[in-house]
Length: 431
Image (cartoon, rainbow, N blue to C red; front, side, top):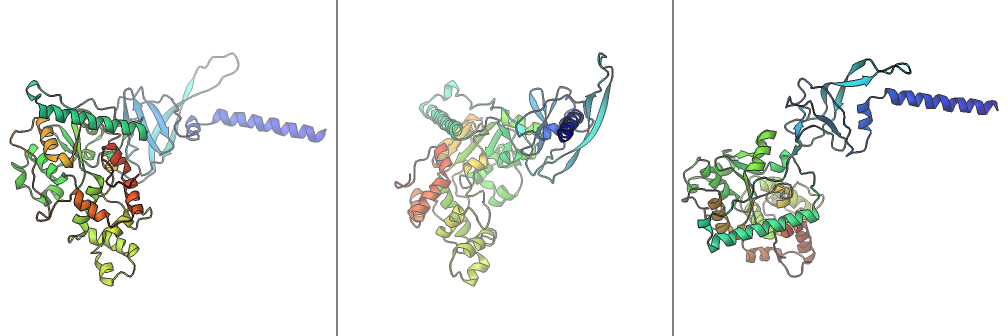
């Protein structure tokens, strides 16, 4: 009996202690223990320097414990806490004092007659992830054709655009889950801005990107003709602005009001074009950085010269590298997926052009945005002008060097690009 009483006393004492602990627990610490995705709402006073916007009295603090990003949601939009860095930065910053209102209980029957402010400093752990920006569906759409433009050619091209965007949206809806529509600076890092004609262009390498940058420079008044702009000026001159160089408000405004466009290319053809450009010609970056790693990993009995220079990578070795989940060196924009480069399931592109119909698509786009009539898309080859462009026939010649399994795995690697942009299978034995 004595043992039973003692055990009961210990249980009652433990329960009382638990009640006191829960009563004194900081509400924010409770939030921290919740599973990701659960929102905890609480009022807070206007901080002095914590938010970019000062109009935050109706705000709510939302802790996302999954990715460690703290954002402050205001009526109608998301405003970022300065605790979240504008660039990718190191973690662990102190949030300034947040005032919590704690109720002080009085004796039974008495009303609460006082409230005390409880200051508490808190560290929000910001992982190396970009700033979150809430972006709604684009309010800008492809310009409608004027009555004088409704000839058969323009009308046909307009219908083609409608169909391409429909397929892209349906593919995204079927295979992607982006209901939150959260866009980070990373997602817009490949997008170039032309403010005069209000154009956003997502750069896809080996799909006419050099000439498109020339066009944007002419539109912006940086040159009078596309022929006057050299290759190094296009890629290394830093004359064009990138969308991720703007602040949150600038990014949001342009995404929702500018005409957004991208040009894509048949994935295998784009891949072969990149391989020919980077590995079959002298290159003081791709040979030592990618070539040496590829030869070292995939070539048996490689010569000392090949290991030293990284020159002479074979297409089959390049494909081995591409399909290796443990690549000796990372991915590169020249053979990355368009789906990753331009995020078409997050960003509502108004115009989707194809390299295969470049002249018609490009000039139609320039017509729609009201570009000068004497400006047309340049036809000249940017580099290795004496060499034949990569065609379907040349692409098939390179892929014939691979086994059926390697061709299938390569197709699987670019499957979403094939599906999203409605390209047919390049080989009959693919499934």
